[in-house]
Image (cartoon, rainbow, N blue to C red; front, side, top):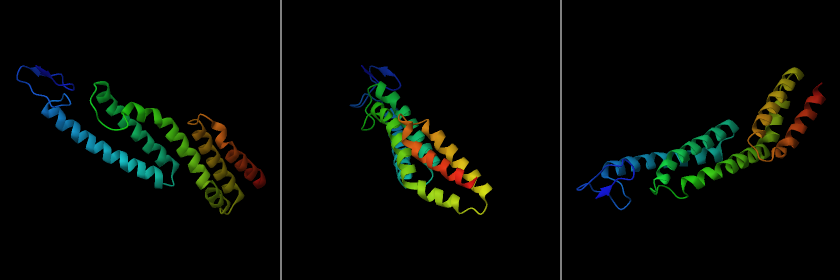
Length: 163
């Protein structure tokens, strides 16, 4: 007697495949995996090409949601993706941290240049403060928040020059 790992239906003439799934559950799982893979791939691409840190972080959240969604299959011993969803979820904090640090390393100078191009000192100070606040907020995601301190210090120096 077979029993589906996903829907738990069973019976004497009930059939499951080599993964322990009935046909309707197999079709549902395949569609879910195809959709999630497409979203996952798009998210990775956006993380790599976007210049907007909030876009990058939101896509990391999407990847995390996919991992959590697939984790329920892993818990039922249903193979879904490689690496396993549990392993994917463990890598999210370091992905988030690396993304933040790399972003500021790459775009800090150009962002400061944009701010310096504003016409009035008042506007520049306001924009420096907004950028400072953004970096401060992103420090909360880091295991080693000091990694962003040099950027905050530089902004403070630039703000002081404007006063």
